[in-house]
Picture 1: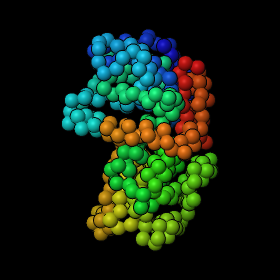
Picture 2: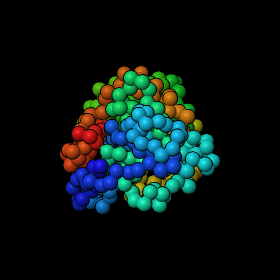
Picture 3: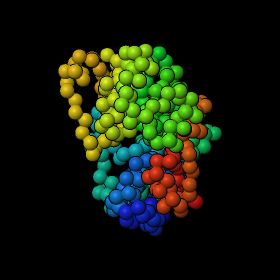
Length: 339
C-alpha cells in the first residue's frame, strides 16, 4: 500500500509499504477519506514522521475472526488505540485511555497505524457504522471537524439561550460554529486570517472580531449584553486566546479549552480568574462514543455543513495538500488515498 511520509522540511511524499494484516480483533480498513488536521506542523519542521493522520472513514477490508464488524461494512474510524477495558473506555471516554495498545508491539511495525494511507488497522470496537446514504466525505466530518466542539459543548451544557465565544476559525472553530448553530446558540468569533473570517461570515456569523484589537474583550462583553458571553470555546491553541476566553465570559459562565497549546503558557491567578468569577473551566478532547449518533445527525441535517470542507484532494497530491494546510487558506482538507 501507499502511505504519506514527511521526507524533510516542507517536503512530503508517498511510500510503498506492505499491506497491514488483521490480527485478533484488529481489522483492516480500506481508507476512502482521510481528513487532514495538525500534521502540517510536522511538515513545516521536517520532523521525520511516517505514521501520519488520526482521522478516517472507509470500508472493512479484512478480519481475522468474527466480531463487531464484517467485511464490506462502511465505518467511521475513531482515533487512538484505546484498550477497551479501563474505566474510561467502558464509560465511552475512550480517548482518555491511559492503557492504550502499543501498536508496534502488537503488529511488529507501525504500518497501518496512520490514517493517511490506503489501509489501516484498528480494534473493531473503535469502528462505528456510517448511515446508509451518507457519503464518505461527509462521514469524515465526524472526526476533528465536528468532534472536539461537540464534546466540549456537551461538557459545558451549551443551550439555545447561550451566546458562545469561539476563538479561532480554523476547521475546529468552524465546526464549533456548525454545532452551535445546530443547537440554536448565538456565536461570536475571533479570527485574523481573512480567508477564515470570510468563511465564518458566509456561515452566518454576524460578529467576527480581530484578535489584535486592543479593545477586544470589551467589545465581546458589549455584544453579549455588557456582562460577557455565557460560554467560550478556545479553538486556536494560543495562550492569548485562552486569556480572552476567561476575561470575556460572564460570572458563573463556562469555558472549554479545545485547541492544543504546548509552546505557550497561560498564567492563571486563581482568585480573580476563577474564585471571584465562579467560572467553570474544562479541558475537552473529543466526544463520548455514545454521542456518535448525535454527531451524525448534525452531519445529516445541518445546512452549514458544506462550508466545513474547502478542498478534497487525491493523496497523490500530498505536497500540495500540505502546503495548502500550512497556509491556513483553507477549511477542512480531505485526502482520497486511492486517487
